[in-house]
Length: 337
Image (cartoon, rainbow, N blue to C red; front, top):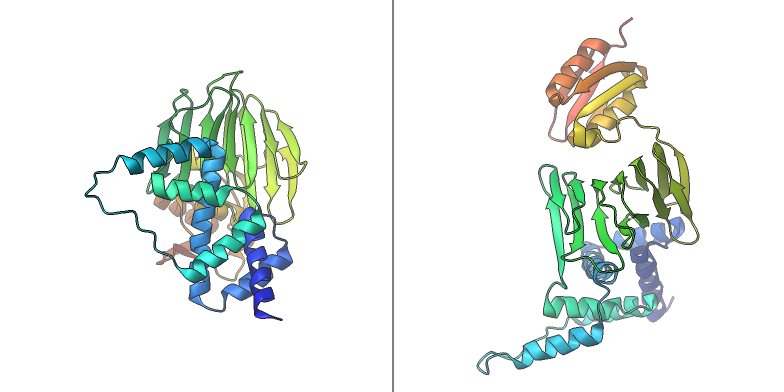
């Protein structure tokens, strides 16, 4: 294949990957290309950061580029004359590929990202819960509980026609009612729109984005024509690999355990229990071969430390937990009668 054609194909794959429209086969081809060297992975990561920055601008700020350029020109002309001229450092290969990807996407996001990099944040705030959950009060009075390891991006002031935020990870929203300004959360490739309600969003799973409704009503919109409306006790699940949006009853009674630390298991298979504990306490379990994985658990825990939970499980199931660098190794002789 000619070198130019090869570059064009990879650029198109990168564009579809960043836009979330690549097929499973295309993702596999891109992964094979990435395995050709760490420089390729670094290159993709830099393009991803620029894409995310420009997507945030488009979603949250809806900038008027003419106004932004005018403001930028005023700032540049107001510099003291002794200040050195603005310097732009070019990296030929990266610039070429970025321009190719931007051309494939056929949107103005690259220009918006350039404005962002030169003139600074466009009236937005970034909240990050690094080591513990964080409670955030938004300008409209809405409350967001952000799970650790998650990030929320918001405008400093909401507009007159709508309220838009961007979520990466897991969060619980208590939205103040405002019929004139719908509240929209973009997370994991979908938009969740409400007027006033309480709901949980998990967008940190590898292949799924999940919305669980506690109170009120929400509309979940996926790329294309996918759209569902949830009632309390219902769940929407977006399969990013299959591009499928489904609605069911909430099947996990512990979907808020990461926030409340309250856990309820009713004849729950051990693998599901361990998965819930991983999400709740941000750890990892490795299960060795044996009968223990087929055991079931019936127990409740109310804001107990993980060590106490594991002690109880060890007594109930006759299994053991060994602390490792990655989390815990699980072994056991079987289930108690």
